[in-house]
Image (cartoon, rainbow, N blue to C red; front, top):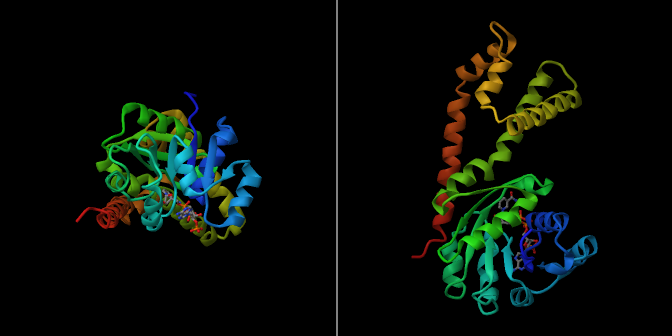
Length: 273
Ligand SMILES: NC(=O)c1ccc[n+]([C@@H]2O[C@H](COP(=O)([O-])OP(=O)(O)OC[C@H]3O[C@@H](n4cnc5c(N)ncnc54)[C@H](OP(=O)(O)O)[C@@H]3O)[C@@H](O)[C@H]2O)c1
């Protein structure tokens, strides 16, 4: 790990807590971290669990080298109002807020503030996030390298230009939901075939874990892995024929395109007039 910087997590909800937990597992000391949280009971519970200090936004802004913004996008305006007078332009701002452009932070924070935008996803809660990171206009390569290392404590990281963040949102941001949906439908198929729900769930979940592990570890193309279980005249090809007949591939292409379009639409609300 590079030189340890002090980090303030602004908003310790699901994502903020997962990040704190990942950083502590990754070797950060609780003394190098603080967080802010609106509910005192939640703050006390997190301090008890992780040994990390809860502070107010002003203290976090004055103390931390890096501020990670993990509030809901709809809560960003009041947070920026609080942050703007307290933060120095040497502080690196890392935003995890879905759909909010770096330009919004650059406009509202002191001139020259370095901002890096991150789109993680919910498997961050189990240390298996896929995060895509993009530099704002003042972020230097060292800032990007720092954020890459930071997010690697909770999963995998890829760099993309900010213009691709809507596509990332549609693919990996919403991605886990598509897999949950598929698993849910496949469990239903097990029920249709007369299996007990618990057995169907176990069969499908472990098949999903196994298939994902093969994809991640073998380096093989998904087509190669699928062909390996598709024998001539066999059961798998009968199923594939139905998937093709019902346009599942086209449905996925359209679905992900629709998610991208919606992300663009939501982002428009934060563009300058
Ligand atoms: N969950 C995901 O799948 C996902 C994926 C990618 C990106 N993200 C992004 O991650 C961010 C956090 O999402 P989440 O699911 O963790 O939301 P969440 O559970 O609602 O967490 C947000 C936390 O921030 C607190 N908060 C709001 N304003 C604050 C302020 N001014 N000062 C201090 N704390 C404040 C909230 O407190 P209250 O309880 O009082 O509201 C809440 O505890 C969002 O911007 C989201 O777009 C989430």
